[in-house]
Length: 366
Image (cartoon, rainbow, N blue to C red; front, side, top):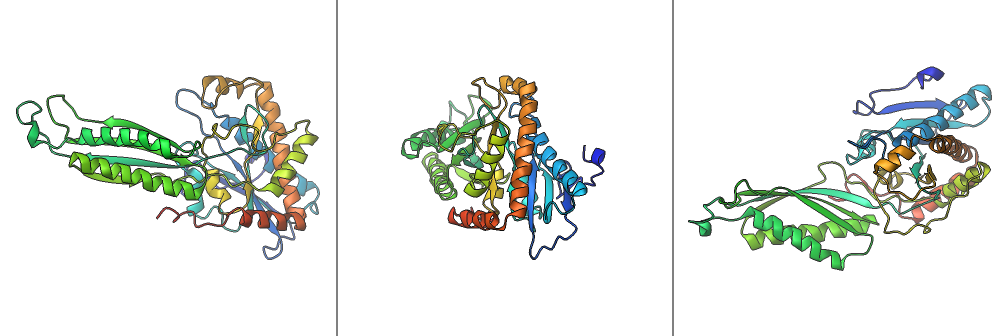
């Protein structure tokens, strides 16, 4: 589609075969006094379900907003001073694509970023939890489970103790914290003391600091299980990059609401939907590096969950297409406001730092 509008693009980009970068710059652009804003698209599909998270809608909103601003400045070169960067960001579903891109320089020279997520309601903001993943390998000693069980050290025991310990830990965690785990390896035969067992888990929390604290508690449970079972343990955090919670930005969110009202929508404020209904996104890693917003736009009137076949069907309806148009308009309008309004840009920076932005994301959990 970028080629259809004679817009050159980098692909692959930032070391990812399916990442995309394009930009449009005003004729008078000066990085010393003008700003750069990124507009992002996601396009992941879910195995066996398809676009059960509506990433097809997310993709076209970002792309449509960028193309609109390209056409605007081509027709009216004085429309804005600054630069707009379009980033197609793959692997949001579990692999932290935006963090991989950021580490490769995707956010260098960018002052703010915007994108929109499809949903069952129009929300200016919603809780998005930070998420880390962990793989735990327990190593014991095999033995005959009947004749010489006392000569073994049961790795499966350690994995089961860890799983139970995580369940008990939930009583002392905030309601928005999440711990979920599976046991993909736990021995080969019942008559052999399990020599090896593997536990895979996710932990999620609402703030970077609480995610770090929860990770430490989980590590202690995993180590304690190994101690009880008398086995060795290897704990591997973040084989794919951790994702941080999303840090909202009130000045940019206010402009999003105004733009959506011009389209006949009226986004609900933050807190309308329960904080318990919270997932994760790698846009959080962007939002703690630079100011950004990640509002939600309704593609259906039905009450349904993300990552379902019902939502995938809803993402291929005229209502979803309308959301794509309204979302593209909203992102373009917010980006344009940010580029031309110096007072707004200062408020955006102030709100970002007041909310705790500007942390060293890549090394935060070291």
